[in-house]
Length: 312
Image 1 (cartoon, rainbow, N blue to C red):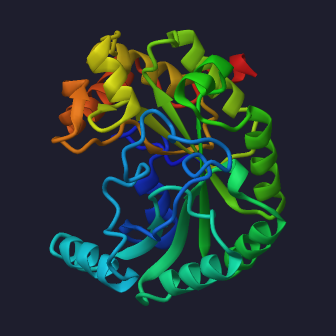
Image 2 (tube, rainbow, N blue to C red; image 1 turned 45 degrees about the vertical axis):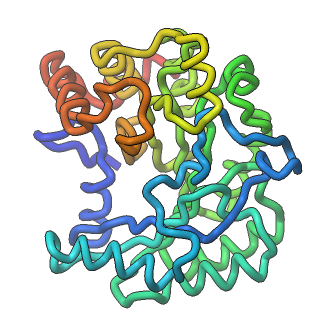
Image 3 (cartoon, helix red, strand yellow; image 1 turned 135 degrees about the vertical axis):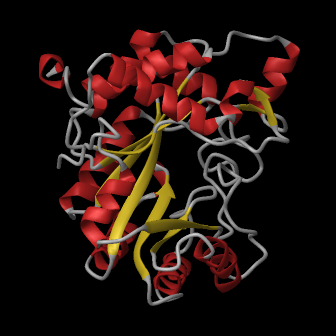
């Protein structure tokens, strides 16, 4: 699906949603009060080194609030800017298929019924928190609404997996993608650029591998070193190299150039709460980062997938 425009030489999520639903679509981050098999000892303890207590849900709702309250808070804020929009309920914090099937069914169906303008459901999870019962429920939901399942990969490299304490294998991840696609469920993969133990080529290799999978979307994140995380403690005790803005732009541009041109790019950088961020400080100016990536692509007269065929 080619949704590239004069403004963006890659397939953006905004363009995808407008093409599919005919108007602006917002994702509303919800907190379903889940934990993670990487926290409770099922797979490991301590979680991934970059995660805060919120489990990558720093901008999700308060787990102590009802889904109705969480949704209304975001809707009221967004309605001030966009009076006529659709919404996607997004379970973001921690591992959102990690729980009894009855809990999952109740939460998911409640989420898609919160508002008549909710047109879809997005669920962030881990490959090792999916089983046949869960796949069946997701398949059922996929018949009722527009469903996206987001899987954290971060990197294909074993050295990085061990460093970040990911606690699942690349094989587990690949199987999960195949099982979801067998059921025609849209898959969005998360990757992270900026681990100091990886080279630019390592980061490009992750995208090359992703090109071999049947996925529909990708989120490209920048590694944020934050307070109250294991990574933050490591950095404060023994600082290591972090990417400069110029290095990050160079890497993301190269990744976009080799990425399958049909893949929808959901994001090209990430967010960190200002009060938690240690490094890189330049990442706080998110729109500058995005503009620099766009500017570099235009300067090179380049676009998503320009080098894709040569990488097959």
